[in-house]
Image (cartoon, rainbow over all chains, first blue to last red; front, side, top):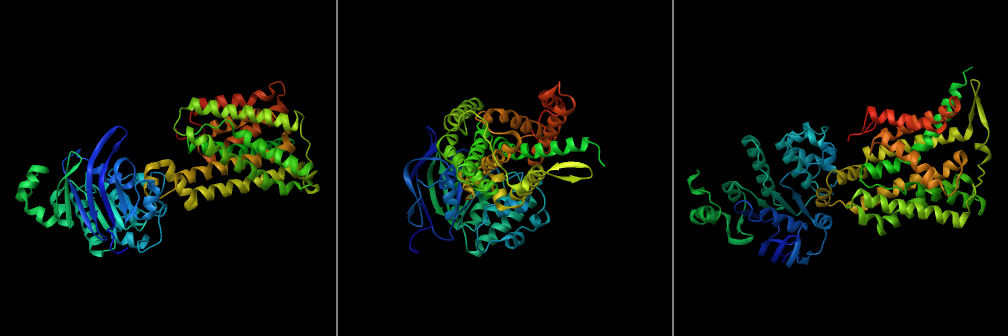
Length: 240
Length: 287
């Protein structure tokens, strides 16, 4: 199945209850690929990740995983198929220790406790702490490490840098770079820091009102100040 | 030579241990899964009748029927969970109460129809009859056995919930169902097994209770009161709380009946009122 893309969305329309948020989204992600999902607030970036996980109502279209239709698959089966989800609110389990948060859903593979502690040394100092005794940055690291412990083929990162101190953001970005350089996991990255997201990823899409307004290689999009200005509203070209 | 109060204490502890085995499952379903299961003692009664039937009709040794009592209650509860309970996980407390109290009424009628309304006789093995002398006290062998079983159950539960991956998955599912599913935990299966475990323990409690308190079709309701008191005094979802509360209620019930017979069975309600005025969430409760 090497010829099949890892993840493919085919004309997906989805939302919550009667509210349709995503309209006719199609995208393709190869094994070990990386995709930035950009756009203003409320255009459906998080909903796109939730739809990949199976938390939304799929109206039309299909979600394909290595060529297999997983449109009707419940979230926990998608996770065991190899999708690791890092939620926007981190959602660390408060009544579990850091170590238990990591092992509670772990599956065998190269990512074990030693490997995630190497990636996030801070977590190893906090391993006996409860999940609710961590700072925001530590919670983000734990949520990321927890998803890695399931040894996913695809990591969904929902605004990992949101609300974190710059020094922690740098640490996280370094970790994501290591992950991508490792070439064992594909990443879909939703991120408000456009320049960071484009630097990290190979491809990018920009959403507007729940539809793909623009799709381009990240390197190309980062030079396209006019499009970014129009769709994301950030003067990216002005930043060094 | 110890004064007789220690004998009363011993009987109270044994009775408390029995209440603990009966109630800990309800504490888990109520506290961890937020499901009000008033049919909990109906599962206990299933265990009791399984043991009575296997001993009296099929000549099984008493001890061999205990796992069967556990299994019968656990399996019945899973069938009901799949068919009925799971539809009401998100429903209001009132809906849950109405469904489960209805099941409790049904259990009373079914038991009366099959077994009649009389108390069921049970013969325990020779080794558990009589008593042993200890510093001048007569300690009933069956009560010693009861205490032993309850301690093993407590230990197994604490280890199972606090130190195993399954226990962590239960706690994770309770903390945040959506995230637990997102990491690949089969939350439905986790809750169903937890529910089965709690009901199975009730079944075991029902079987163990026959020798101490007897068994008739009203068991579903008579002991529902005790079990609810234990759960509310102990605090929802807390194993340690259930244990402490079961001891407190067991000892005060026996001591009350022994020393102040005119108050009789009322003392446990006083204890409950006092504890809940002091700690509304129960001894070990968090909310």
